[in-house]
Length: 444
Image 1 (cartoon, one colour):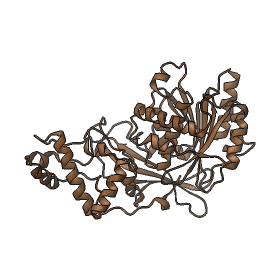
Image 2 (tube, rainbow, N blue to C red; image 1 turned 90 degrees about the horizontal axis):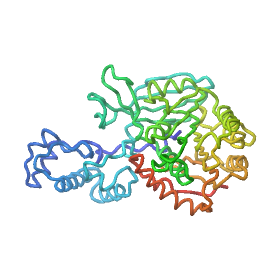
Image 3 (cartoon, rainbow, N blue to C red; image 1 turned 30 degrees about the horizontal axis):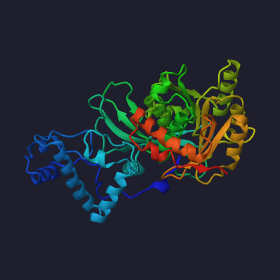
Image 4 (tube, rainbow, N blue to C red; image 1 turned 135 degrees about the vertical axis):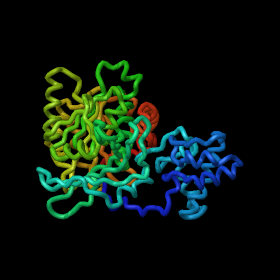
């Protein structure tokens, strides 16, 4: 979950990127370029690449010049030239899901879950669900308008988009935590499914960090993540996700990697109901949901793999499970817990695997780090933590097995950067995986 209060940014008077440029502004740019403006009024010149209108005789180079003019004019409206320069510098570093190429190239898609759009789902929304949780507290799902509400490429005509936010509320008090945010597509009448999430859109910063670290880490350890490695593997990439939330991370794994099978374990049946009915989560034969205790499921899977003589049950275990108060249950990380027993019983593949657990910023990572490391014993590899960008969440990662060459965090960081770039290409990832996958910190 993400503390929504720490991310609440006042919406700009006018975003320099998000809205479509009006025919009036497009016509002005066309006049500056000494071209005819009539087609712009019909097709409109968008700021967002991938939806470029019909521009008549305007060539690609002229489109780029027009976009620079439009960007400068829009940025000046929200704070003058100095802020415009700072915004463009930030864009060029891909810290907000933008690059200079994606700004001016109509064929490069932008990150649909970029941070610049978060004011849309942080604003008050319409309540869709408010249900009690079996193990204490309640959940709420709200919908929020998206300015980018047109049908994404490849979706049926008449499809629209909006944000969905899942929150947990404890029985007493309030934590003000967002458990999950998804960007969903609403299909036309009689379309099945009626609502589905966009797997490439990960609005919460920590979710981008988790998928970047997990997939780059697995690839560095030799797991079949990349197509050229997967084609030579007799088994699929298998990931266990404990905690469903809105289902954005499991969906990214399963839908962006054709060779990946994901088991999701969720304790609360009401969360599964909220995810499938409102958050756009769509299970499939490669994306399975189990309603039970995650630690018990992990231990049973480990013992079954050992009995069958397999080298571990999963390549990765991702723990993103919280109670209504925002705490990771001790059964998923503490010494002597079922999760620790599962790790010692062969839950991870010895050829190279990892466990990654998402904690809130104020948690001491020492005890869970020691418990995971001792459970893997002689098979334990490097362990490290990563602080999620923006949210401050801390991801604890303990590797298992892998190449002997990865002897230090520096070696691992360099390898992660290389593998993250390859994984980003293989998954058509819209955000900057290499940057997110290399902020490694030593464990206590």
